[in-house]
Length: 255
Image (cartoon, rainbow, N blue to C red; front, top):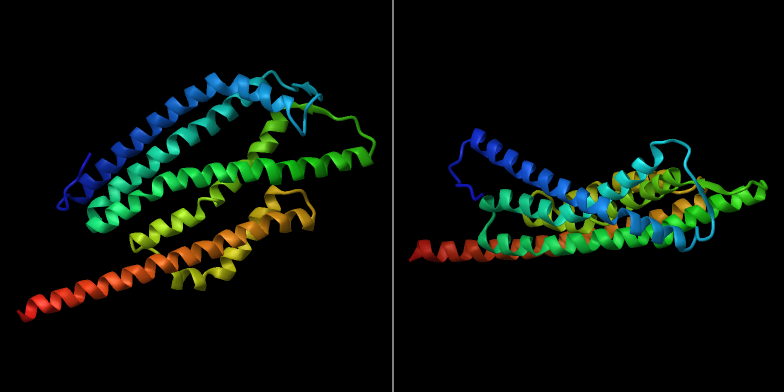
């Protein structure tokens, strides 16, 4: 699927379409794998804290299907993410210098690792905190806790997926800086808007209290500042490389 620098716009779009089709095919394969592993995963999650030994119900004939499809989609995303990132890199590769091609390729496994870390943080910290908060409210109102299983896992994934995607921020910023689509100067200018967006996201995925929103927003803001720091490291290295290339070109032209 290599493409030449002299390709027309139509040829570029055709190649992009092929790569998207491949990504969708891998997503389908990943979703099939998700269907196969959904039952043991569901049984395991039902047996551990914070929901062990609780009653489970379905409130619609479609609830079991929704549950299977949710696990299928999340598994599909996990399987597809490294492949999709590679396809993006391969499509942009001809426009990169050789040193940038090698350096940007390294980001792919780290992006997958950060996604897993985001899922872990979302499940063990944010989700459990949100669940315990809502359970405390139910107990204070003396309500019986009988959970609809589809509603429970929908609640869980609505928290996990956004947080896992936010954890991709440092890798995405480094990659975009590496291919010269982003720089730390722009990130600093956008800082106040980024903070506002992250606080809004934190408020949307946590229980409606200030403490929970702050607990989630603070790590997100730290991730943003870490992204700015990494972008600055990459940007300074690029400036030094550009200066070296300019000096080398000037020396050759003098000779």
